[in-house]
Amino acid sequence: MTEEQFYELQPLAIFGVSSQGKGFGAAAYLELKQVGVQVFAINPKGGLVKGEKIYPTLKETPEQAKGAVILTKGDSAIAAVEECSREGIISVWLQGGSDSPEVRKLCDELDIDRMTGSCILMRKGRFPHNIHRFFNDLFNKPKQSGNSGTLLREGK
Image (cartoon, rainbow, N blue to C red; front, side):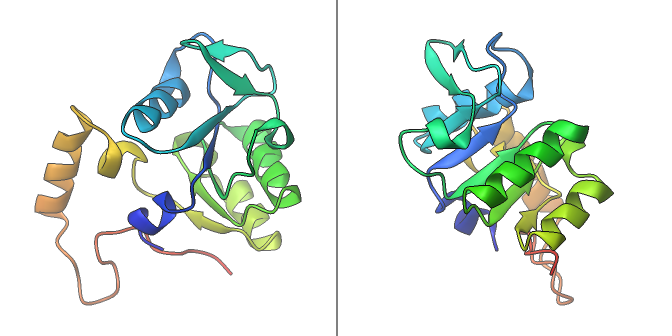
């Protein structure tokens, strides 16, 4: 699955959005929303981020998410993957600390496709993420061995 194919899974659930508006979860949610990606903020504590509702669970979103970005770590990342499985989401993007051997194994066990290795904002984000995209594209030319410079479907 490429990054663009993942974005087509809208709406996307973004796990790990803080109501304090700080951290990468809130930044990713707000940036994706601003560039036109339909997203739902998810955090068990609920609340608001910059006036936007944070849903405590996937069940509470107004529409079923088709993909999820997980920006939490440890037990919270495991709980997010389990919730995705219960709600029928079969594609997740593991960011940063959520990409652990335990979470990868759980995705495999639950038959969930996982994407890793790139920033969710690199293709859709604006400045400074577009600079990250430029240098990534410049130095990561497609290879004949299968790594085309996009995220590949993993697991199974």
